[in-house]
Image (cartoon, rainbow, N blue to C red; front, side):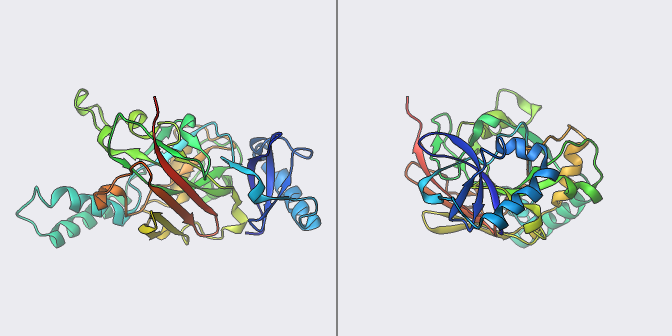
Length: 315
C-alpha cells in the first residue's frame, strides 16, 4: 500500500486524510473536502493524492494512533452480494441438508452442492441494498440487539465506486472502482426469515441493518495498489480463533460481474460500496454466534485490519 484514503477525527474536527505507511495521516481538509468529494472527482484527485504522498513524505503528518478512525466514506448506496463464495454455499447446503436427507452421505450432498454451484455460476449475481445507518468505524463496538440471538459475522471485500455509471459491461466494470475496503456484514440469522410473511422472502432490513452492523474500513486503498481483487486473502478471528480463512478466488461471480449486474439495476454513484459476499466460516457453519464480550479481528490482504468488541444493546 503506497497510500490510502480515509476519514478521521481529532478533538477539533473530522477530516479526509491521506494514510502513509499505516502509521501517519496527512490532513487533506485544506486541499480537498470530504472523502466523498474526493471520490466525486476521482480521476483528478488521484494524481494529486499521489503527488502529496511523494512530495510530502509525511511532512506535517499526524500520528495515526492519535486519531479516531471513522468509516472511510459517507456512502449514498450500499449494494450487497449474497451467497457468492462457492465453498461457503456448499457448506451451507451440507449443514442444512445432512440431518434432513438420511438417504445421502455428506460426500454425496457436497457433490450435489458443487453441481448446483456450477449451474449458479452460469446465471447472475444476487444483490440487495443495505442501510447506510448500519455503517460504523473499523474499531467501533458492534452492538448486539435483543430482538435476535444468532448474530453472525460475514467478512467481505468491498469495492468503492469512483464515478457515476449506468449499465456498465463486465469487461469495463473495474474502471469504475476507485479502491477497495473491508466490510463485516453482521447478520442476525434468526431474523432472516419471518414466519408471518410466508414466501415473501428474506427480511434483510431486520436481519442486517441494525446500527453498527457494518464495520467498514479502516481506509480505501486505491485500485492501482490492488492488482488482482481475486488474489486477496480474507481472515477473521473470533477471540483469537480463526473462523474465516479463504481466498477471494473462491468467488462465484467476480467483482466486475457484480458491479456490472448492480449497474444494470441502479445508477452507481461515487462513494457507493459494492460488497462481494463472504467466504466459508460463518457462525452458522460453526454453530457459534456472537455474544457480549466477544472480540472480532479481521483483515484482508493489503487493506488493513478491523478490531471490534461486541456489546449488548442498552435500553
